[in-house]
Length: 448
Image (cartoon, rainbow, N blue to C red; front, side, top):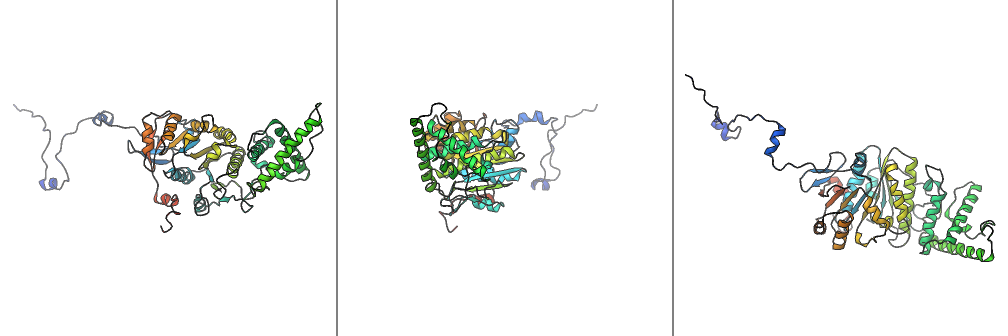
């Protein structure tokens, strides 16, 4: 009788020499299985931290896998409810490097994408985005006091025209009120509002009769005119006319001082021809404007209004508006205008990217709080102050133990919060070329 022996669990190497060279190991019979069944053999299976659509941002420090994210792609896929982005953190922690790569250079690898930058930081006498702009085929638009730079005309129909109504009067009046409030340092009262509205309409009529675009000087001149005869209805009186004249003349004197000193050369003429929206990259260099005073807040407010209204008429492209050191859009006279325009971003293909630090300094009733919480994406870099770290945790409903983590994050690392998902610990990655163009230490290392 023949006995059938069970198969051996393994077989010897056929060639001891090849075995010593490691070219093959003992052969073992395979176990019939599938990839689904074999998953049990790996006890630490981890899901990718993000989808693979979008742009590479960096590496997830928990899984070691790439992190992909792009606000437009995420909004299209209903991953985020808003394409707007906030980048928070102390100086020198990596915010600029992230913005220059992910939200400027890499955005331009997509078709039908453009980037507009409000460039605030001085690097060698010009904005730090100026060289990037030139390398990518653009030309920086420079603003400078005294008339040596570009100008913005608050009454230019291109800045304020509405695509829905083709009416620019309301938008212009809102910007005029912001300038008057900046000039006087106090809100515009009812008498001033009425006088400003009348002066604005008068300036529009005069310019139309002259067949030209009105300028701010027309409004200043009209503030010295007598009120229309029917302005007070049946309640005309010497007291009313005196109150009106006082309100109008006060605004005129404040505006003349502001345009002659703090805003000289910025708003006192027609819009410069170089203030255009290119098809790829436009950089507005604000680095030579004084850090204190009304110039930067008002220029950024006007630029944001101009861009928002322009995109409502020119659809088909996706635009990223970058504002580093964006306090002037989060606080002050332009905060509510920027917040209003941000709510329109989804309908016009616009993603606002705003970088801030020291968030604990923002009052709880500030319009900036809504801007921070409504952004679909937040990059949280290291916070040196515990109050700032705690405010980040509170704003984005993070676990309380992350306060300590936010205070000890190394340079280049951040917590990435995408809508309501759990935060990711991410290391931002750059190519060699990106490292070269995002280096902002040249002034401190002139011999590098």
